[in-house]
Amino acid sequence: MRRVWKRGRLALRLTFVTVFGLVLAFPLIYLLLGSVMSTAQLTSFPPQIFPSGLHLNNFSAAWQYVQVRSVINSVVFTVAVVGLQWALCIMGGFALAKMQFRHKNLIMGSLGLSLFVPAVTTLVPTFIVAEKLHLVNTYPGLIIPIVAQTGFGTILFRQFIVSLPDELIAAARLDGAHWTTVLIRVVVPLAKPMSGAYCALAGVTAWNMYLWPLVVANTPSVQVLPQTLAPLASSTYGSQIPENVAFAATVITTLPMVVVFLIAQRSFVRGLAGSGVD
Amino acid sequence: MAESATERRVEDLTSTGPPAALTRKPQGRSHPDRPWALLLLTPNLFLYALFIVVPIVLAVLLSFTSWNLVGAPKFVGLANYAQLFRDPMVPEAIKTTFVFLVIGTVPTVVLGLAIAVLLNTKVPFIGVIRTLYFVPAVVSFAASAVLWQWIYRPGQGILDYLLQQVGITGPAWLSNGHTALLALDIVGIWMELPVAILLYLAALQRIPESIIEAATLDGAGPFRRLRYIIWPGVRNITVIVVIVSTLAFTNGSFDLVKILTQGGPVNATTTLIYYIYYVAFDTVQVGYAAALSVLQVAMFGVLLGLLAAARKAAAR
Picture 1 (cartoon, chains in turn green, orange):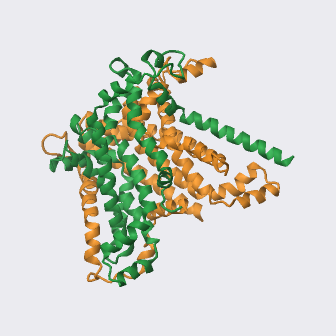
Picture 2 (spheres, rainbow over the protein chains, first blue to last red):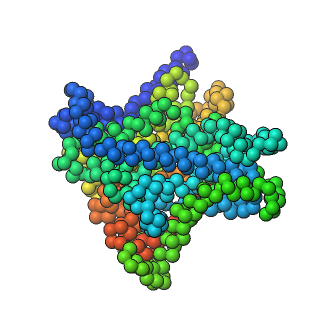
Picture 3 (tube, rainbow over the protein chains, first blue to last red):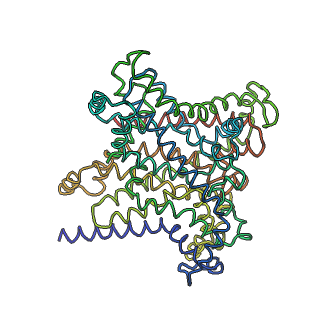
């Protein structure tokens, strides 16, 4: 009797979380369905849920709107930011965790400080620095100021590497291994889960980044996808770009991250939960 | 475990004591590690100094000047700070910022915990169901804005359709001064909920199932289990969730406001952070925008400091 009651409750609970989960995922599911509808179907009222046919030409129209260039730009930007930032953070984190020198607290403190300063508040001065260095509307101008946001990552890697046993590193050093060898042969392999989590998080952040590109990249040759997409969210766009094409364009920009998420879910979950250890 | 690492991360930002690994005495300038440590750290710190520290210092300096991006900034002393007190938009933007923050953070924390408790079970396919909840975390502000703009569309969107079924005529969500902020908060909650659920799940998975089962056998109902077993297990992480959502709903409010409402209608969604952007880029008063930035950082520095203190108290 008790068992039946327990099972019934579990079924109820699972039904509830499934239904509520579908409600939360609904905007994304509808994005996918709407991207293959005709304009008339998507804008009909009452709204239709299931497409009556596959209007795949939405995607070719959306592809033309999005421009291959901004897709390439987004890929270059994301890969460069994640790769460079990861390298800087793991090197810095390793030095701060396992090497002996002075003023470590000062360095950690100033790295942590940046987490509490919103990007908007330093936007103009950052732009001034980029402009003085002639970086406006260039790839380095888009990429390097974001790579420079090493505060969070360096602290994260330092915290992880500090927890690795000192003996491991001392042993490698006694065997005559150089610090850089210790980093590459010992620390980087051991920090793999942390690196996966960090790269997943940094990758999503870079792929979705809007504010800095908006300011520093104002020619199509360096623009990234969120910039291309943002005008489609204004209430007046419908006159120029049909809604179904806008949906298809949104799918094109969102799907890569969703696919990467589904493949590397463990890393993402660890990254979002702020940890590299399970 | 996931939770402990998160805690360590935040603790490190807030504690002033030396981290454990530094208790070994540094052996002075001549220590043989030093050149290699410098080599490993220099690229990182150089870029950080150039693009993060220098702009912060410049922002503070600019707050004492009047500048429209043309010519040289003119030193005006504390005039910009005096203007903060005269500008009627400042109290309004602060109020909007806090209303947006509270309406966003409270449901994120409460729903995040509730859903995490329900998802914290070991049955087949629970992973698939969890994925439904996690996916919105990878969607950009821009993409969310396209989607929600369509859901909110007056008289045409799916939300108004659903409301019609129960006899309510939906307001023009994004262009109505009474609902625009709420509408933005709903999008924000939708984007932030996955992170809250994840953090709570990580904490809940540390509570041994045997304890919950023993309590159930001893006759503890769902409410008492929540009060005496679950809550003590997630108290610490709750402060982290609040900090993370506070950062999301203050910094993140910018992208949503910028893309969906541009501060309108009639300033109803002008949060302080959006106002800073507006002053700097639309009215080109860079010095005044810098003073507003100092206000923003000071205000949230105090708030986050209080939250960090709450975290220490909760940990005890």
